[in-house]
Structures are given as C-alpha cells and as structure tokens.
Image (cartoon, rainbow over all chains, first blue to last red; front, side, top):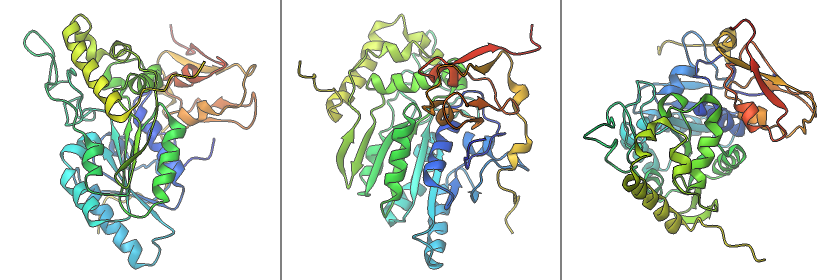
Length: 294
Length: 87
C-alpha cells in the first residue's frame, strides 16, 4: 500500500472524482493537518460510522458551518501557539460552499483566518440524488431541473464562486481540476505556504450524477478544461497571476461525454449558448495558447 | 461531549470494498511500465502501490474496478479483464 493519509475502504462510488481529489489535497497538505468538513458526499462516504478513512483529525458539524467551525479550530490552534505547525483545511461540496455555507465561508474570508477552504465542485447535490445547486452549469439535466418538452434543463448560469471569494480581498484563490492532479497538489502547497484565508475550487466529475462511465472521470475533467468551460486560474492578492493555456476545443467534445447533456446534442442553438460561455471564459482569462513560432 | 467519536484513524480499512467490482478488474501487465506513478496518483481508492518500473499492482481487497488506472496509463500497460466468477 502506498503511503497516503486517505485510507482505502471508503464507500465512494467507483470512479469518484471527489475521492481522487480529496486524497491529493490531503497528501499535499501532509499529516499536520486538521480537516473540517461540510455535510456532503465527501463527509458521508469517508466517515461511515464507526469507521473513518481519514488519518488526520477530522471534524464534521453541519451542512453550512465548516468555515465557521474551522475558524474556531484555527483560533484554538493560534491560542496554543501552534499556528505555524498545523494546517487547518475546511472543505465541502459545491452546495455546502456556494449555497448553504456561503455566509459562513464569507465570514471566514472576511475575518482573515489562516485557513484553506477547498470546494469540491461536482456541480449538483449528488449525495441526495442530483438536485441542482448554485454551481450547476447552464442547461444541465438534474432531478430538480429536468430536461423535457418544456424545459431545457438548468436555466441559470454557474455562480462565479472564485470571483466571489476573490472579491473578499484574500491572498490566494485558485481553480483546479481532478484531471490535473499535479497542478492541484502544487496549488494546495502554494496556498498552505501563504498566511490568511485561501480558497481553492476543484472540479470533480461524478459518474453517477454526470452519467458517464466510471473509467472516464479523468477524460471528462480534462475535457472541461480543454474546452474553456472550466478555466484553471490563480489569483494572488486579487490579481490574476496564472492560467492554464489551452488550444480550445468545441464544447461538444465535453458535452457528448455525459448523459446529463444528452438532451442538447440535437439542439444546436443551445450548444451555441454554451459555446458562448466558453468563449467568454477564454477571452476573459486569456486562455488561448499563443501560436508557436514556426 | 460531542458525539459520535471515531478514535481510530484510517479504520475504514476494515471495510473491504473489493466485492463492489461487478464487471472487470485491472491487470497490471508489468511489461512497458515506466514508473510514471500516474495510476497511484489518480486511484480513487488509494489501493495501487509500487516502487520502480514493473512493480506496480493493485489491492483486490479494495479495488472497485472503475478502470481509471487503465485509462490513464500512458504505456497501456494496465488492461481491464473480466472479473473472475462472472458470466
């Protein structure tokens, strides 16, 4: 068994992108870490009572308050004089971060606690049966935004969480993807080397909710980045400091891999709208790779 | 006091998830392995281990058979084969 702090035997679905990303984050953070978790898939599958797959201290309280509990943990660590030795990581899914836990997260960012917040973005409430969340992308088929004769799926665009976090004036905001594991680990290490509140959002495919084969997790995550729908960016002190440059692919390359977008494939006008979202991202963040000189 | 408490770290190891495999299991061919470590990096069950070329293998007690290791292997040195005992 390779040395990892995220033990096997958890009850995630086969091919779970979140369990991949959670292990990468924890292994990058190292053993001197305290994890505070929102309710969500990650908490449920990793701590099936009376077992836990975490080899570090782990606290779960409620759906909305990981950021608030982590604030308390960080203050206690500071009081004990161990602030330099111990990393505090608060984490949650997209619902626990962008919808239910947003005020606790905003408070944590505003008060300037030395905490890394990691949002595992699987783009719906997967644990309770694929209900739409604030981070569900436009036109997605979920159980509360079903596609059919009248509806085309989720009517609202994705909430710009990295920008919301960045607007708090915090030292570090990054977007990563489970399809780019080394990049994710680099961003976690960089975040933990900085003082103050940090926010990382990780794109984690969900074979159940996104309706793709279990062995396509990495392929789907990479396709989201390569089409420009999930730009991998970093903000340092409010300034866009790096982005992963791509040679943009058409968004169909990403949509056709997943059952949740199946209803769009014979609707070119809807695909055009999604292409516009990708084009806007590419323009806004300057994602397009410069042509190599011949 | 807060409850419920779980005092033993990593105790999920007692929960063997191997029987979750329904169709296929990975087979590490151990021929063209370049020890790039990608399969270890991405395994959602953290059940692949190895040190050096052609030594990597998985733990059948925990592998759920998702097939991501076979999909990411740059040398195609991992094959998904039919699970034993299935029709």
